[in-house]
Image 1 (cartoon, rainbow, N blue to C red):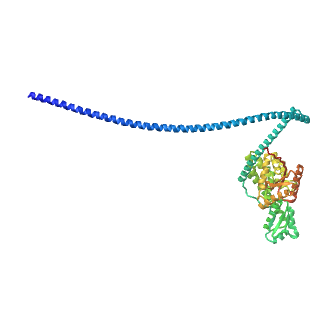
Image 2 (tube, rainbow, N blue to C red):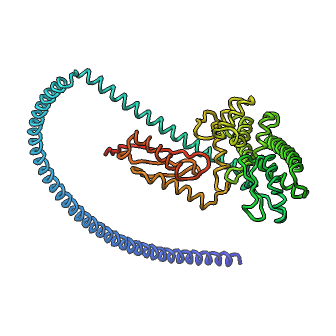
Image 3 (cartoon, helix red, strand yellow):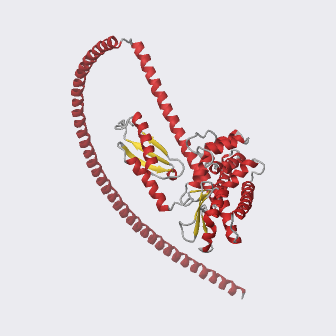
Length: 505
């Protein structure tokens, strides 16, 4: 049994070894076949890679050949251009050589000309020195003096320009100040007239005023100093006198007589005295009110205050003189504050500048001279006296206060509408002034300025010399005086200018 088992085991071992051998052989055959397939596949791939590499190498060779051909063409073109440039440079060098030869020849000629010019200049200098009597050193000194003089003239011109610019700026600032003052002091336009006519209650009253054999009217004229005209205007009694105060007294007395109804010489004397007291009181009150309104209480003497009050009944071309003076005082104060001068002096001078108009029928002379004389008489300061007297052009204004009074007088009195002058009449008067100036020979242009207080005349310098300009100004002023009616004074300013213009190019 055990032997059978052993035999079976041996047989099994032999069969297993045979199977293993067969299997190993089969695996060996299969591995050889696989290796051969891999070798064949590798050979195929290497062959493809080789073919591809050959193609790429061939393509690179062709590209290199094309690039080489292109570069050769470029090099050939560059060599051609270089050769052309070399030929051009050779040609230019030849031309330069020829030009250098000509220049050397011309340099020789120029040197010859220079020597000749030096000789001529030396001879000319010797002749000039002989003619002028100056050596070269003296001539240099003379030239230096002329140069210094020209520089001084240039400096003077520069200074004048700077001064003109300063004046221009000052004018602009002055305009601003004046406009500001006028805006802050916008008073009503005054156009009053002195009352010279009294309306009658009825026509029967006219006979009672005349009285038996004219006794009443004669008594009224004797007491008031006023001419009484009864028959000239129906329903009116006209009072005529150069003294505005007397006219006011006569007016007040006549109105009281007509209201009372009792008219006879004794009653007339009584009523005139009463009217005189009434007017005197009004005058004193008007003066005090004006001084208080302006703000100069205690600075104006009582006598001057009385003259100021009398201006209430005085008009100038329809403008009430007292209102004109108070308006001027306010404007002058505003301007004085702006420019930094004495405000009190400007106020007092403006208020008193026209008091002479209350005395022109009593004292001979121009009103501004009379006003200054009264101020001087009653102890006013020199600054106030000068400002009063210089508010018209015949006296030169030397202080800022005087200039301010002159300016505000023009602002208040000469503007259109302040007086009984319509805008049309104002323009017509300005035109008449220019026409009077243009009527003379040698006039180029003329302008009426400063509201008709000045006419500026520009003459042709080739037709009017300096002496003739002076005579022309006098002739124009004389013709204005004889042919025109105007308030105040008119300044005739004749301008003659000669200009020499040249251009440096």
